[in-house]
Image 1 (cartoon, helix red, strand yellow):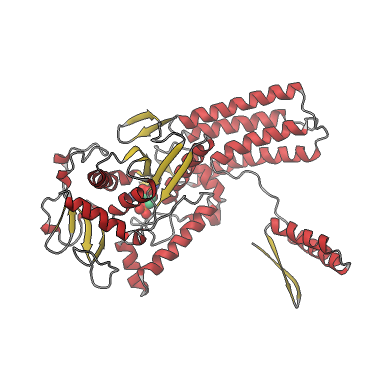
Image 2 (cartoon, helix red, strand yellow):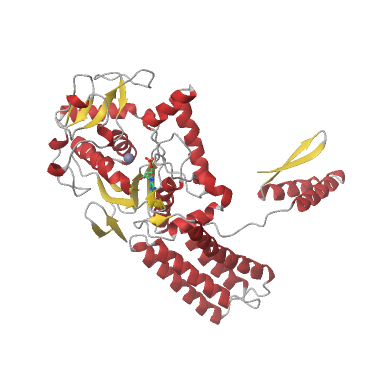
Length: 469
Ligand code: AMP
Ligand code: ZN
């Protein structure tokens, strides 16, 4: 399996630190708003990477944080007159709903910055002890950037060409820095802001330290993969490397993966620029499975422009697979024969050739565009060879092939037919009749059948009420 490593600037064979295991950290969102589909890109991409690794038999420990202390969260909390945890907890819950709706699996652990302060104090203390950080007069603690020899190795920048002025430098006490390149590890509180006690001042962490600390705590000093959007390469990931390697004395992450931007009119989609669609907005117009398909239709290191035309195309592609599986389900329901014949076995062997193509694409730095093309070929093959006279086993195996590959992509392609209101009411009437006849087993069976299809029954004084889950 080859992965493009930002650190080396080339594709490398993936070799995990520990056989059969993958330790992976993905920088998550700052939670002060509903997530937009730009934020959804790394979620979908790295969820797919994780799924593929698991399919290959790796045990994946997948950690993704929520940044829940930040200027923007504090600003919103002040506007609403609530504690900043009210804002962050609200948007963490909303983010988790969006992830589920996009079929992005929850991480093994979703740590939150505000719950990991102790670890941050400890790492900052170590950095000061080792001479890699210092306390300025106002209590701010800075990382002494030039003390870390490898600074710039991820973003391929020469430290002497760098100037101060990046995101993390725009804070109070800047004039007290030894060097404009030094970045904040801990900063003094301002009026009305959340803060924690520390030996340097009452304050809160800088942005970068949380990821170094959470990664160490949940995955260990050295990890296999660290990932995020390409805007994080510099300074965030560069600073994470400096902090982790300086504190732990070990190499931090072996493979650095970065997705390119999701753009709109060829500009990066971002909250601050205001040119964004939330996942929630998009879900009103499109099935989020189509959004997922759209994200996977381009290689993750290529910029992707969001447009109606491309979403339409993604919708058509996705439908093609759904219809292919629907066709197989129809044939399976009506199949006569149980015994697979030789000719069918040969066809199945051919069908598995598409899986090999799929794997080849995924193992070439997760080329999901080519992987989807392999799924299309398999669906086309299935549409050509699946017939009413085919055996149930053959049809079932074909379906399994398609579903296995789609599941790696996190695509749900088997649609359960929706029950119409009339059908639901007819089933409720049957259940009432069964109860009247004291056939409670049948009544329960109907209730469970409905539940499986997302219909919840409620027995009230006024009779049976139902709702969709
Ligand atoms: P943020 O909340 O801005 O810290 O972003 C959370 C994650 O979304 C990070 O991995 C970012 O790199 C990523 N991200 C933000 N905007 C975009 C975008 N337009 N396209 C792709 N990734 C993005
Ligand atoms: Zn991070």
